[in-house]
Each structure stands twice: as structure tokens, then as C-alpha cells.
Length: 246
Image (tube, rainbow, N blue to C red; front, side):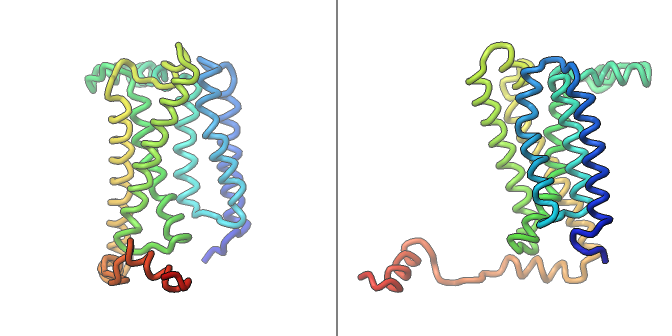
């Protein structure tokens, strides 16, 4: 078994970090819209700083680090071109001689949809690892809570985008939002992130079902009532009684 914070784990994280920094530097050069690029990278930089700052006290698995790296790599491509203008169709045509948009019947640039889906698909597992190792969740809650947090953070990001667009306005807001005229863009983005997280948790559950001997018993135990006494006003009353308040 590899120990927490082992040299091998740190080297692996360092390799991923170097690869990401190289990509970041290349794509930071002459982005399509510098202001939109800056907005897109605010949260990205904070997230990378968080990962680096916690890698000694709370090292994640190589699987989680790899999934995070893949998502951030996709995000940097979107921030370089702005999500609505990533030329994936031109790349596809050069590689295969046909239009991917025409083959799939796309009427808009769907790179943003891919990244929102990838947000759930790639980050739900690292979120699950955090829940299990910090909150000690088990069974059903080890799959539901990562899905729930992915859905809620996807909604929070859409609110962040809305707020940033209101503050900056104009063409920058349109490039940052990347709605491409779709009034339901935010709802579709959240739905895709949720679908990605759901698939990630289903795959994780299927793998664990085959490998984990106590999978069923742990699942059942996680759904049992742990405390029969009600909370709410009853809990407040108990606290008051404990503190001698009538």
C-alpha cells in the first residue's frame, strides 16, 4: 500500500502540475478575448492554489488528481478561445474531412456543454473522496452527496456567471456567459453537470459492487435511522434544559 504523502504520489501530482502549467502558459498567450480569459481563470487559479495548498495535509488519490487535471485542461481550452468559439469543428474537419456539427446536427458550438458535462463526470469522484475521508459518509450517502454537491455548485457557478455579467456588461458579458442565444442555457448546463455526476457515481457504484464484499450491508446500514428522537423544537428544548433555562 502506498502511504499518504509518499514521494511517488507527490511526483505524480508534480507531473500533472507541470503539464497543466505548460498548457496554461501556452493558452495564456494571445487568448481570443483577454478580459474574458481573466474572468474564466479567477476561479481556476484559486482552485489550483487550493489543491497545491492541501496536497501535504490532505493528499488525494491519483485517480482524483487525474480527473481534476483533465477537467482543468478542458477549461483552459475554453477560456483561451471563449467557450462559444472553440474551433473543435474545424479541428474535426482537418482530422476527418467532415463537419462534426453537421454529422450530429448541432446548430451551435457545444464545447461549453461538453465542459459542463465533464464537470460532473470528472469531479464527482474527487468530491466523493473528500466526503468519505472527512465526513465519514458511507453507503448511499457516499454516492448521493457527491451528486448533490455537484448539482449545487453547478447552480452556484451559474449565479456567479450571472453576477459577473451584470457587473461587467456589454460584449464581455456575452463572451463570458456564452449562451449563444439560448434562453435555457443555464438550465441545460446544470442538467448536463448533474448527468455527468450521476454517471460517475453509477460507474463508481458498479465497480464497488463487484469489489466490495460488504457493499449491500453498508448501503443498508447507511439508510437506517441512527437517532429516533426528533430534532427541531425538541432539540432546542433539550439544549435549554441542559443549560438550566426553563
